[in-house]
Image 1 (cartoon, rainbow, N blue to C red):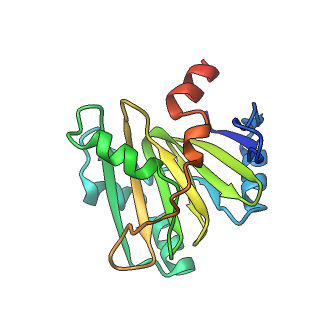
Image 2 (tube, rainbow, N blue to C red):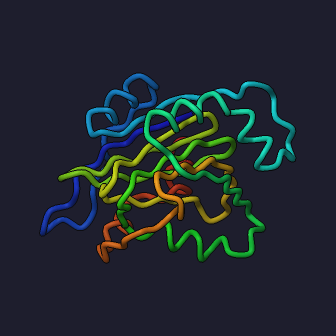
Length: 191
């Protein structure tokens, strides 16, 4: 289930963001995110994918939706990233993605399987978006954000880029990410 939680950014004397306002209705999530310039969609494959489908097969299965986005935004490159609990660099990847950062171009992720938690820091709010299989989310250029894939990650996503060199982050140095519930805490809360 996709979930959006909107938190207030703690003030000078606050330590924690509080509980936040949570919603699970797709249309409400889409509308709330559209209001801050974030695209949120649901995609389905053109045909059923094999469990061991490679990058080429995955991209072919979503070719119509990918073509539409390429035409709309001028994407120059894309790839498929697959992270599982036995990934040898899972902890290093998690730490890199958990640090608040921005990109010069906008970031687009489509979840083929699994889940992950995007945090978008916009003005005095943090929008925590739990994405699952079928969800597409965009993060506008220069939007402060971070991503939690959890302690034992399991996700496969298509990443689209407007630049030919892919994912390049400019880290803010702000420790804000440590104040918000992790993916694992959020999933446990929802259970």
